[in-house]
Amino acid sequence: EQDILNCAGAGSCGGGWYDPVFQYMLTEGVASEGAEPYLAIDDACDFNLYKPYRAINWGFVTVKSEIPSVQQLKDALCKYGPLAVAVNATSSFSSHDPADGVFEEEGADEGINHAVTLVGWDDDKNAWLIKNSWGSGWCDNGYMWIDYNTNNIGYAATWVQAQSRFYFLDDDFLKILTERFEIINPFLHPKEFEKIEG
Image 1: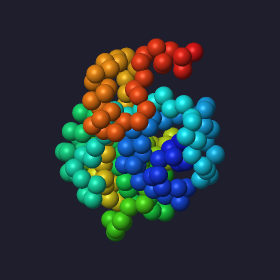
Image 2: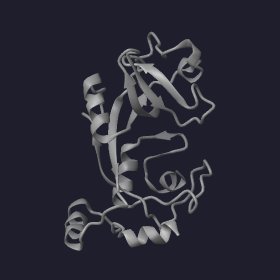
Image 3: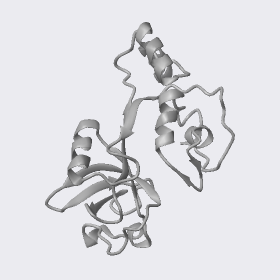
Image 4: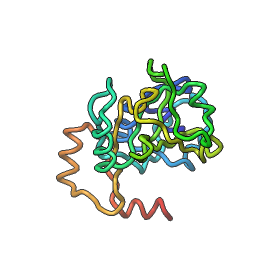
């Protein structure tokens, strides 16, 4: 988190967007938490930090400026796994008691101000399962069921694919990727992962 905060140009402790983060992960890689501990402050970028983890691809489910349909979000979850999405996190959202059931709020569809991870759905509940970044003390151990059509949930839905440690790309293909996507740091060979994992 701190490496991204310091270097990705995606925002600050006052807020930001996640798509520049994924682009940073694609071109630069990301340091481990151990190498760059989270301080929750805006700090200078350490350009010499070893950044072994990266994304290999990302994209919006539809476009940044809209909420995809329920079916489009379901399809993306099945294809890519968890999605980054924006939501209007009101005071009611923040203080929701899971004992009250699925979260739904009238008149809260103006704007967005927070990002969460969309991890699943339940059609019987007519709701998405989301994971928040506020820790396990929030809502239901850090998760919430939220109605499909409340608080602009799903705005700017984005998927990202991580580099797999179980395969490597040959040098010719890496050269093409480097030229096409302006990748600065090379992808890691699995032997490099062995060094990281000790």
